[in-house]
Figure 1: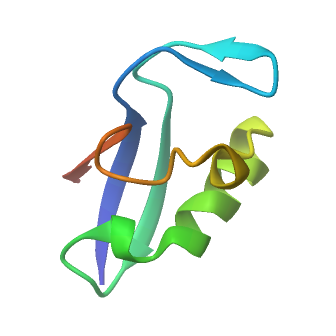
Figure 2: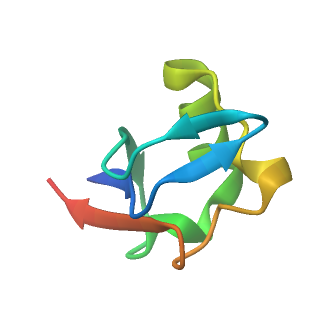
Length: 69
């Protein structure tokens, strides 16, 4: 299983809170593209930062970047 770091690319407004680009979480997955597991990414951002990127529509390649660590 590979571990990825997923970061926000841009400044975003999430339910009235502005977050800067570069805010990151780490997840482990069997997929080569961790953004294929949107629910896992969503739960990581909720658990670590308390941000609900799912309802805002930010769980895609346009807003998130990933790298293998």
